[in-house]
Image (cartoon, rainbow over all chains, first blue to last red; front, top):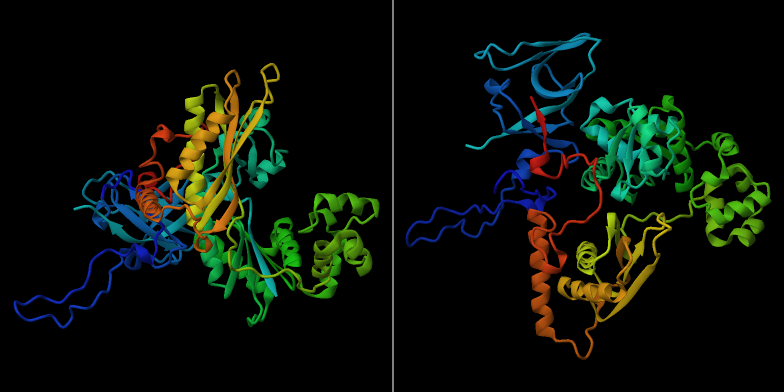
Length: 144
Length: 419
């Protein structure tokens, strides 16, 4: 499937991938597990709460050391309560950003995860910023 | 006990989910073809923008006050509605999706200690999980629950949840509540009520039962009983199939040529047919219509329509689209500029219950139904119009959507980018 222009179905059980669990086949000996027809669904793995799960796309390289590379799709679940050092999609002063969130009383510190480039600095969030933690990142989907 | 969950300014709230900077700023959403305002945030309402205001009349006001203007994005609204309903279903055993932005919850048989706290909890969960603000009213009847949810919008200190159950509270609220805002009181009843000096919901509930039965018949009597706390309106968690399907649009510019008009009506019919198939119905009678721009009084005016009857009710794209072409050719007259057109399926039947007519060709019908099913599955994977009939042209509807937001939740190519 190509990524751009591909229209996703509504996520559901019927979305199960056509991967069938079958026993190993040994010549001349029928597998006792041959009649198992369970299906693996990527949705059941990646989307725990279908009401609160959203997808975003990574832009830039500020989070490469957290395995989020340019163009990757990140899965965000608003049902997950933000915790200290979680990776989260945040909204600060008119812009979306994904960062590691250090929570402390009265504010937060947004850490980039790219120590090598030297161009990303932590962002201190204070009472003057328009700030919200939009949702916690639960998975990264990347093309190999 | 029943609850009504009503999404606040739903379309405008959907637009804010991926544009949090618009919180606290005026937002409006326009109807198809960017014709008029169909949703307004509270800030837009405060500017005096009314429901249905034509966009060309409020454009100046909107620009002067920095109003964020959006074309309708039904893919987004439909998906956000699905999410809110899912949250609601986790709070009650049965949920009736009343409209895209409202749902009733049946709380009968549920043990709830504190209904006000429950209502606030449902509202908070919707907000946290979907980012949509929802007003939740709880009351002994559906009609009162609607009133309770309206109170949430008036009084922010209710924090999105209101319980209207104690008789003294109900009386206090109904005494101030305009009867014209009560669910089920129509325009025609309003005239009668005015002449009877009935202005509040309390006035109405205080009428005698015989007066109500005589003047307002069964529906008015049900509303009367519901206002008095006696549940009368059925809870319907099964969605009734629609009795008719209409797809119509206004065009950005008047269409004067038959081939172009025909392409448009074919696209409307294709989209109506796919709705028809989704609900498992077949169409027996169809009407195609086209009308000129009534605001251009210097031009010749017409409202033309043409009806087709299918001897065997059908849900087959090919049969429906060729009938639409014929109907469009029949209604079209040169010399007119058509501003709007549409296709209405007027008589629908349950597909499972259809007895084929004596002259139906079973083998042919089977082949055709396989073709239609294949088209549905291609559309599901690759988007509507990925495969289409020649009569549909390039599949585009010539309608303005200049301000449409991305399909954030339904197209991989439209995901919001985060740095």
